[in-house]
Amino acid sequence: MLTTAPRGTKDIMPADVKAWRYLEETMRRICAQYGYKEIRTPVFEHTELFLRGIGETTDVVEKEMYTFNDRGNRSITLRPENTASAVRAYIEHKLYAEPAPAKLFYIGPMFRYDRPQAGRYRQFHQFGVEALGVQGPNIDAEIILLAVQILQSLGLKDLKLKINSVGCPKCRPLHREKLQEFFKPHFAELCKDCQSRYDRNPLRLLDCKNPHCQELGTGAPSLEECLCDECKDHFAGLKQLLTAAGIEYEVDHNLVRGLDYYTKTAFEIQYQPLGAQSAVCGGGRYDGLIEEVGGPATPGIGFAMGMERVLLALESQNLLPDSEEFMDVFAVCPKQEYFPAVFKAVIELRRAGLKAEFDFQGRSMKAQMKQANKVNARHVLIFGEDEFARGQVVLRNMSTSEQKEIAITDIITNLQTEV
Ligand code: ATP
Ligand code: MG
Image 1 (spheres, rainbow, N blue to C red):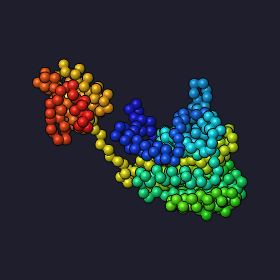
Image 2: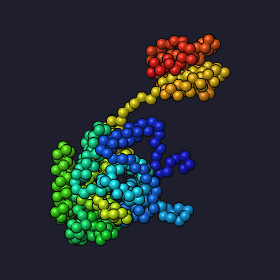
Image 3: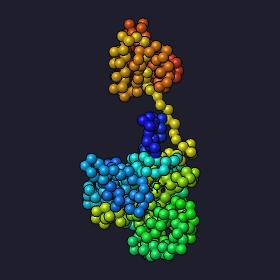
Image 4: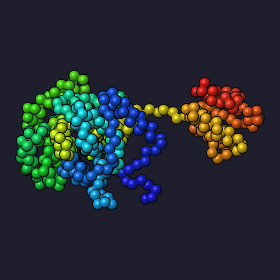
């Protein structure tokens, strides 16, 4: 136990970090193009924030939160998602007083007591975006395009964008009644969770992962028939913009998203080969959230993308770039008494911006040359006995095997012209 990471967590080892950085850099670059600014919120918050901001009838709040009392007896929760925290920060720092929209993005670890399997972990990472302060479908379209552009620029294929409208507090009550009527004859067959949600939030019945509940849900009254004019217009506007941008989408009336605060637009991007973990990105509008969390009534929309799932998709399509690791110089020191000179040369090379390494353990020449190969050194500096006595060293180009003698005082100038 001491030597294994906790269930559902994993180390990201140096060999994997390259792929993560590639992904993060792509996200940051495209966010900058769209004018979204990075925010970094604490990894834990007051539990109350998530109870309010995610909703008490959601899977996340009911079963997945890492909640504990701290030493001051406050209830603290490791963030299971970042939207509630971003909204809390928006209110705390009065971003609503600045011209709308506030455009934020984040990248970081989230924590959920999920059942670990491929693409589902207890500590996982999300990239997400929030646009706060504007109504209307234009920003919804922009946000969806941002998600799509990131995935497309990574080269991913076979992704499916699904959209829906989950209505608003004006039109949902009618749908709610219709849903309850529809499920009533089958109440006894529903899973326990769905039975308890039947009264509290029947829309969530359409989101249940239990196959029998899903079967019972086929043919359920669609929210579309109940949408008020405002929600209908909003949804039509969004579809028009997506079509104008040449983005393919599918309307899925069963797409309800797990969180209570969603209004109007809901969307998900799926990569089917990931099976039960096919949701790569999920998001939507949350016009009720900011007020719910204690801020002024403000509309908002956002999404979160599962970084591990994007990486799995990239891996399965062979899209991870393999950039070669290398060192500019490896300094070989055959005699311990030369070490101060080697050390000085390496430090100077590093100060000049070059990637330089040396041996720490006074190993044999052969072992040091082997190490130089292992770190993929482009050049080797050999502090040979005869040369050293003359104030010279041997500079060897590892790809051409050419070598020349140079003055110790000229190492930097020589290497700067070579690399
Ligand atoms: P799922 O239905 O797969 O549990 P979710 O509806 O709980 O997803 P969201 O809360 O919308 O997911 O989170 C947004 C994204 O974060 C998901 O689309 C997914 O890519 C990723 N994600 C969610 N939970 C996990 C997890 N436990 N491990 C890895 N990624 C996750
Ligand atoms: Mg989940």
